[in-house]
Length: 295
Image (cartoon, rainbow, N blue to C red; front, top):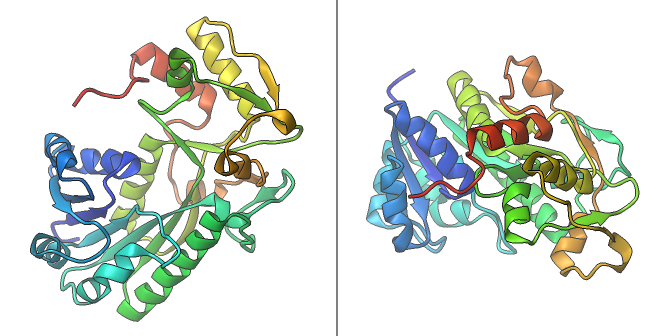
């Protein structure tokens, strides 16, 4: 493999975790942000910030695309499609050094399976608008990668947590809720495992679709209760989902109930550092790394 230059479209929670890992290993990393005010944070993490608002490609972004061997896309699509393909398709198609693309998608594309198991062979049948848009973006990137003749990894992610984004934070802030809907389960994935999976797949120039998710789909109220037990605080009272006051988006998450298998990526040899939320919470609390890191 040649010396790598990585361009991360969307250096948010997941993108920053991967970029920080790469920069610490001495790799050249560009990360895009919509907000110039966030450029300093990316620099402190070892990345070169590039402004991208989804509407066009500035000179510094075109330069980063031209240099990139790896492109990671962590920006949500909208009603107009994938913003990266919309704004930068021609530049990426012409990128002379490009060897691999990764697209961060969601297990939401599988839709609702009444708590049953799904894997990568399961036919997607998204329910929510955002999941429908994600599946359309997956297919657009697949068509592009085939045309460009470059391997594409599509990582279907479950609910993301990590430092600054977890049940401990919600409990400490007094906003944790234990919503109970009979039979409802969700998978989760620690942000460091997303970064680890990206590094693992990039090294192999993997091509295909993989679920990146934990081993333990669980009722969301159990996750809050376990975090409270680790913190040694009282958990919030259980709230009946049917009578709870929720935003339409929050309620829509509960319209998709499934257990997501991670067997395929483990069969390739990937080992999750945080295989379930209990182990992850124990380690995060013991290591005092559950809060957002100072920048």
